[in-house]
Length: 323
Image 1 (cartoon, rainbow, N blue to C red):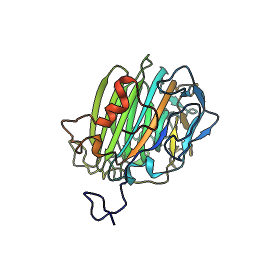
Image 2: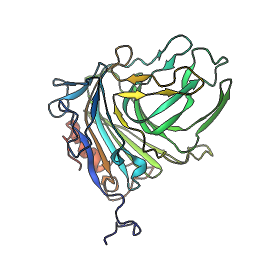
Image 3: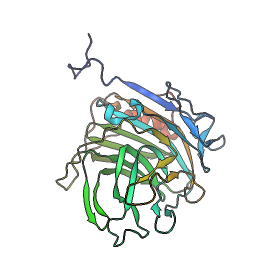
Image 4: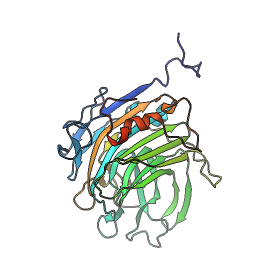
């Protein structure tokens, strides 16, 4: 029997698959690296004129989106040897954020980019009346594992944690939030595509942001110990039930409100979801020690070879490239 180096007690775990799924989005939702094909909902569209790679990108300025049932390929918590994902995105018209819902039941608007989780919403803990327009994710909690969504012109990356990261007591009851923001990048409507590479291993998250012109920024967050506090967030939540969604955030509210199963916050929604194109989404398990010779460290944060290779001087790499 052959055991994995560095883990003599495990013969088959953390097997490298890079990519384990890759979506070129070339006028279809097929997995170009395996069998994790996406399913389109409400006839998602493709764009042959605005793309960074291949023949098409996925078009989000109507109502369609994609989904796929859970697979370990999409799950950082299922891959202790490391997990990475990457994608290209371009904003053609800004997401305005804001609120949706009828009077008394408004809810904050965060259209989903790529998600394997969701927020539950409840009345804002700071409100003095639970029956006013004060729906707020900060008064709720995270479900699933991770989310990438738009907040106005900013793209945000969140991890849902095992333990609570903040407790609030208000007129709507007691709330224990359980999520960490691990990175954010301003991404207003522009002529350039943006590229993101996200790596999670154990209790740490690293995010690297590029545009076509060059490298922009890097972010590191510990998913267990919140800097400057005594809070133990417990690391990333393990949840194998959440499906993968591309182009939608399927929010939920709890029993304190009347919005029980929604709303779906779709990227490209005609009201305030903006207009976006997404191209070439990839996932990788156990990506070769960060694509370099050793694991990353919180500081200094060294860009991984795989991220730079996938960005490829702003030209990208078509599926199923994985390093």
